Length: 432
Image 1 (tube, helix red, strand yellow):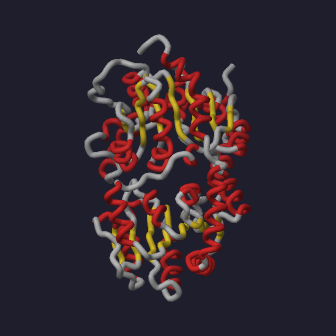
Image 2 (image 1 turned 135 degrees about the horizontal axis):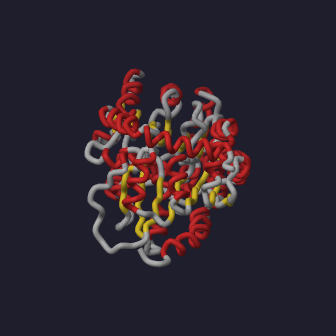
Image 3 (image 1 turned 120 degrees about the vertical axis):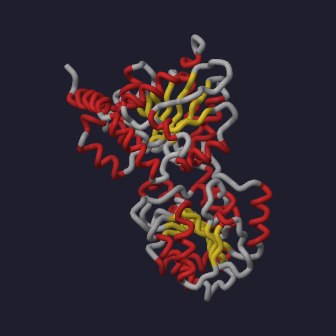
């Protein structure tokens, strides 16, 4: 007799068959709001149009949600493609599709993932007939998981993580998540805590592989553009506020306004998590009487520029290279922090707020080694940045400590690929 979770999952998949008109309406509304690609929106309905040319090969489906996951998984996608299979890589957001168009390896095909409605998912699976599916991080789509399982397609969740909030939420509906996870062939978790949580929720096979984001360098601007930026800021200390969210920009700007009296030539670069907010952040800076420039307009920082808004995609690594001090955002608001490894890799002194549950283990290691400074708010941020900019010795010690911690977190890409090899070998057996 089927378990309650299995019955609920089957009922949900059946309900989505009846709700296909609602799915089409959702896509239409998102398209009207500019949140779907104006020419490729039908891919969200599973419609694939003309298939790419070339010899038929076994297909591996890799899915990542947005820009951060896309950038992290690109090296893994390249390694999978090198095995000779055809990779179809799906994402949700238009911005991630723009990144994929520029950075995907040759031969890898990008598509927008179908909305998780059974007819749309089936249409996609019929067109591509994948032999293996790899979902990245926390992408848990019940219909896609169920339909892959029904077709006998192995599903691996790579770089898997389970936040505190998600774990609390899923525990309340454990029969449902257990039914979903029982259909996942392998979970490759980022940390021992993630491994424990996935196992507790019912995943039959979980291994700790580490976080592939720690192996993936952040994207950088083309060489000529990077050289122009370096020349424009030469000789000035740079405070980079990376991956900021609403509510944080105001704190950073207020702290910077105070810092200017102590470090007059300091340049603040704000790289928001969502570049579409660039104009909004520029207006906040202008309201404080600060001379501001926007990267998206093509402007370079000038000697009189106080705040430079890096509202572009694919250049964060370049700004980390230029940074004297890097405040890693998502940590002064209720987001849980972002990846500090990138700052440590590029030899910027790392500063972050107290809300760090997304990268709890990494920050704990950084703080213990003296490789990061944690701040509670504006006052602490002013003091920490002033000290790290003006005291070269302390900054150097903290950068060296962060670098040592970062080096200890690499290797997840190789471990993930090793775990995938048996599945890739099986996918390639028997031809296309």
